[in-house]
Image 1 (cartoon, rainbow, N blue to C red):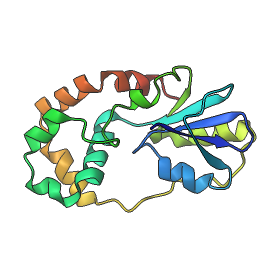
Image 2 (image 1 turned 135 degrees about the vertical axis):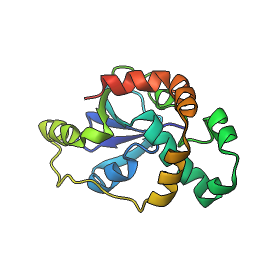
Image 3 (image 1 turned 180 degrees about the horizontal axis):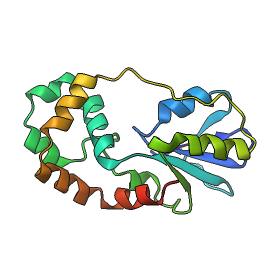
Image 4 (image 1 turned 180 degrees about the vertical axis):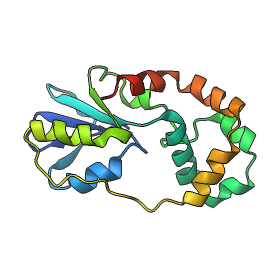
Length: 165
């Protein structure tokens, strides 16, 4: 189920995409975000998106953890989509094509946009504990063929990323 969170001002609705700053948004807007499930209505929708390869690496680390060291990496890449953390971002935005998108690497633009909308908080980036060694292992295991396969699978996400502010 796609989760959306209304912001207290009643005009904005955040579309939550796993591995795309969800913890950051919960942390900085914890007083103003309210889970509403599959909300539809006259809201201004927005979401954070992420480079598909970087998100896939992070998703693999989250889903498999240290077990990834013992798995057939080629088979993992071939399957691509293992759980919600590796599902295409475009699926979370289906029906919300007009949503304003922000790249996770440009969160300052989101903070400025929210401030312009009257949402004033001390914006910062919340950092989850990240297994950097595991993420480095997964990244370094990707061959050019793996990367091409992933990019073909995530073509719609690449388009979204290009559209992001």
